[in-house]
Image (cartoon, rainbow, N blue to C red; front, side):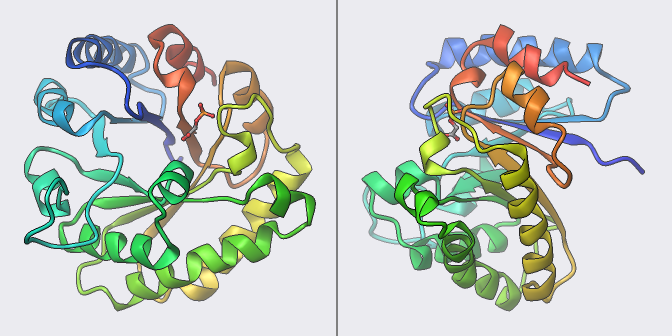
Length: 253
Ligand code: PGA
């Protein structure tokens, strides 16, 4: 069976509830128009919008994701939101390890791995973001960085008692996020084939792994990047805030 292309809308700290609901209604129509085309949309609103968006889309194939979760299960962690709570309000996916969380909130690879473990327990599918900085890219350290970022995450997934039926890994070079710059296709080919074999070698459990690309994705860059083998979909920031731009990406063959 042909795999669906995956489109994750990472709304970050944007889209008030009324906008989030309007966008979701448009997405419903978009999916109806694309009924026979294999497209899987995952909308990731802010925490307060998750429940209402999930309710609105409950009878559709559109999935809901959160943008973060706590590394703890339960307890005195003021302001944190647990994976279990996210599952209760309708999230079936959750982004972890986004470079903004790594940079502004000092999340380490180990913290990110603990979050993945909590997501596995709550049967939420993790969308694990990895990627190198501009300097690391210039110094040719991309694969080394990715290996280091993935190590504790893959280990914790191997040890998990509950295994999600899908795991998404999003390669997002930090220097490509919101900059309009993207890696060339040859670089992407190398990185994605490395990712496929690295994950196959180190993941000892049975699950389906999808590989996404993120960083300055729009209708133009998608056409270019779409030619790269082994990319199952996209993690979209800026272009997912404007429905027309998002539609242009999702409607591409
Ligand atoms: P961008 O963001 O599409 O605006 O570059 C992607 C992301 O941060 O996930």
